[in-house]
Length: 142
Ligand code: SF4
Ligand code: SF4
Image (cartoon, rainbow, N blue to C red; front, side, top):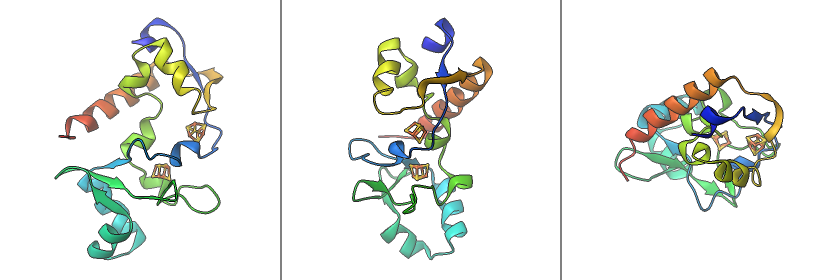
């Protein structure tokens, strides 16, 4: 994979673009992650399902998109559940499909201004996040 072949630069600018315009992908939440977020928001299970999430599979939920924005993104462009954000958000951009080639990495840079800028990301950190993402994907039975 790309991170094993070359050093990768990344620094999140907090632009919030990866939390918007996601009609063509989803923000997966495990049942455990969803329950932690629900408790943090202090809403009922019924209201949480109606307002914040949808079922993607039997086990996996996805955050709802509202007018092209993740439902957890506040009007100032900040994540309302940052401390509890899903694995998918924590591990970006070190997803297998982004790290599979230089082309995929540079293509993703068109959507994320933090890719290819900033300092070199320690290999250990990339490996840790990639492994975390792969573990979470094992639970996704699409
Ligand atoms: S698009 Fe990239 S730079 Fe912008 S908030 Fe998301 S990860 Fe950070
Ligand atoms: S959960 Fe938070 S970090 Fe993840 S896409 Fe939604 S607003 Fe962005």
